[in-house]
Length: 352
Image 1 (cartoon, helix red, strand yellow):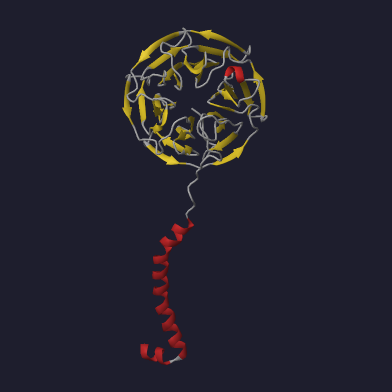
Image 2 (spheres, helix red, strand yellow):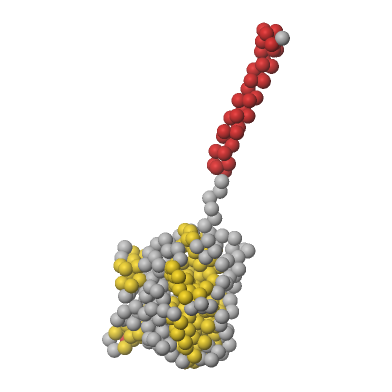
């Protein structure tokens, strides 16, 4: 019968069709994984947009969000005849309203400061430590604490930090502010000093294992993270070190390193992850945007900043991260930039 089918034109076509079916099935099974692989979408690394620039070009600022508004505090202004006597150190405070994309000037700091730490607790903004002008130097480390009340647009001085230092980082946990690291112009400070705004008192916690300055700090799920920074104010000695502090046990431990050694950075928390922006080093400024997942203890690279800079600040409003001011080149450079990072799935993310 098979011979008869093959001998007829109709039979030859039928046999050919039967023979090609297994071939097509096999070809499909072989190429299917390749097709799926080629159809895979690149991972979402977030996007950037530009918002209204700040009124003043600055660097080495402090930035924080309070009641949905973003405050930019202190730092160095771009030098001019108007600020030459203060060596360009500014007490200026400017507030950004993300809802209207507008800036407003607020009551200035009682004194011009730069490289301060900044934190929010109990509905107030706290500016801690930093450097002030003293004689012909702009690097006088201070221990001052100033509290800003947005309802009265006024500053009050509070109990000073036990250790004078600048280039430190502040993070909030359980209503208290943790002052971490810094540099007193002689050496790095391992001190972790804890401010209780309710009682206006300071206490001491376990020192940070790796003393450093120009670092970033952030709090997630009751743990505090100290990230990057430099040794003794030298940006040619940048670090990748990331250490986690548990306030419940008063202990530190090392976790996954920041992928890029950098200092003069800013950090912000969205969706249970820490995003770290910018920085400077001996080779220049960084546009890196790297995110840490504390659950998996891993870092990932996200969409880079449109403009590399250091001495910048960041704050979160409505799940978006506003990265403001900072110097585009190492050392004394200034900007009024306000670039906004929209993390992956920002519409469903929650700030911490």
